[in-house]
Image 1: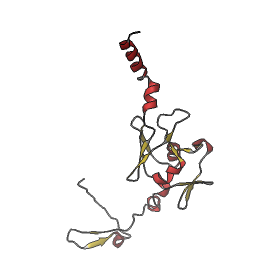
Image 2 (image 1 turned 90 degrees about the horizontal axis):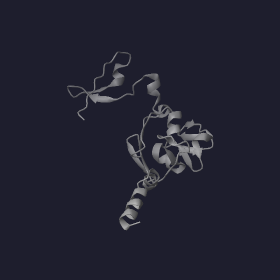
Image 3 (image 1 turned 30 degrees about the vertical axis):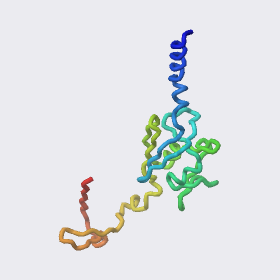
Image 4 (image 1 turned 30 degrees about the horizontal axis):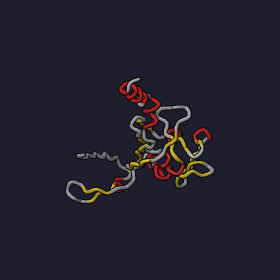
Length: 163
């Protein structure tokens, strides 16, 4: 075998799917609640689900402020039970946890980016009661108006943003 053929064979071997996967960084980026969390290490999915994100258990509080406890993943007075299938050693399937919590998930595994929507149980009681929280804004003449001033009346609130 000549040197050129040898180098070509070595280069072709370096481009196999297994070699490409081995060269990928092992981290990921998680987008949640207006924050970007960069994870240095993630686990591999045993079922090879493309969108599954296995994070180190210690990273869970940085992502969504939940902590793993014996009763499940807890944040303030909310605890979500975690089945054994969602935990593997030091890793937790964050995608499965999000779906269990009713959270929407958008993933781009090739770019190693996962985006998570709001968690319904921590969103606030006003969404279930359909009562808007009280707030104050200036009207057209500059007088401050509170939403609570219109209690018992029908209110049409129009908002606009330039961004």
